[in-house]
Length: 190
Image (cartoon, rainbow, N blue to C red; front, side, top):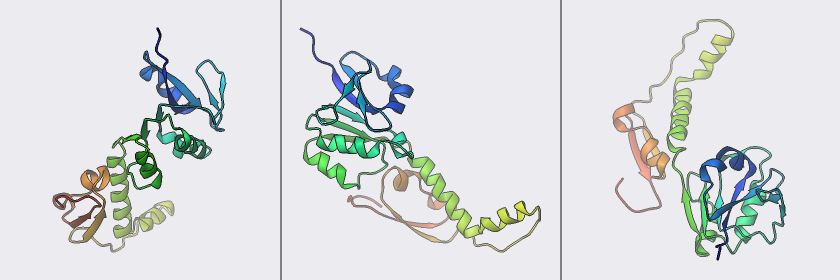
């Protein structure tokens, strides 16, 4: 007797990019198009109201303009069959996570965004302290202009959260010589 394959909800973008790496016996893709329509791998339409994914794999393309994020999240909120949601988000602060957890859905995320976001924050801090817009304006005018700017060293930072961004990717006291205080919802060291 053959066991039915478990449907994995994923976007058409994720399907095109990654399904050849995910494909294995026992699972089948439930593909959400950019307009929110669902289809099977064979191209058959699936009604969103009766779709029953066991797993939902959220990927970063859900944050792109024109993505089916509302339809995707709406489906995982309604799907009583859902057992596991892999989130593309860095944290778990959105109320949808608590809602899913109360239903017994396992929620996981990847911390691949921690370092890029921390680096973006560092760039923004340096831009602010060093007033980099003045350098960009001078460069656009093909002029060399100096200006005074403040060093980051010796400043005090409050980092909210100890996840992959605030806990690991944020500047260290040694690297920037700043006084860093971290605040988390979870008890534990610093």
